[in-house]
Length: 383
Image 1 (cartoon, rainbow, N blue to C red):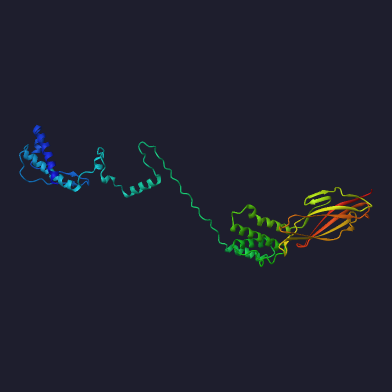
Image 2: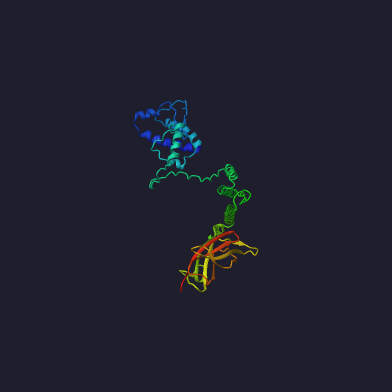
């Protein structure tokens, strides 16, 4: 501390002595010879003025070395406390450009309203000051992505009550029972519920049971393995189609005389069916059956049982003139049968007179208790 004060005093004394000896300005000498010096105010870093009182000793003659030494001593006493309080100036402070006047702290302190408005403006604009030498960067404010909320599933208590009441009020209505069974399926209940379907006709009850069985199998299969092949995914639905076809009306889409029939859909038709009177004719017939029913038997094989009846009628009167022996057709397979046909030979008797006839085939599905019929024309002509 003493070393710093001594250095300051020595520098000031040397400078003032050199200037005082060469100056001839009376105002400068009078200022130096002033018996009292006003308090010196120095603005420190905190902005608080420092005041040092002047000694009350008799002032030396102006321009003398004693006067200069007294002023240097006074200045050193004023600067010393500041140096001891703040220490040496920092390098960062020396680098600050003081050419531009800085506003006072009082002018920099905004009011609460201004501070709030400034903060809101900053938050809204999100602007950045441009960096010299670089391209200005514009920041666009992006709206936050809408939150993906889970779909709200409405309460099913009211729906359950509505469907249950409708099913109870209309026990014979297939649509009401279907809605109720589907609701129970969504609620993870066991379907088909045979007790609630007791009012349906046997055909409707079987139809709805088939539908619910297939939907349950389809869902359970997907829950077990959702990465299976498409052919396996749709297997329950294909089975549903087969089972529904078996409950549809039994039909005979094709019935004709043939010369040969090696397989399903492969035959050589005889058209027109015209035969000479007075002699017997062995001729082949071919027919296909659709919507028959195949069920698993005790050997775990799909079994189809049909009965066949052939009758020849006169076209004009409708009287039967010939009938083939009634036969039963039984077919078993490891897979559910989707195609069924029969090809056989029959013998038209020689007693048939010249005229037009109708050959009628009647097929009965013994498992589904359904019957289908079909006819083809026959003409007996003279030789």
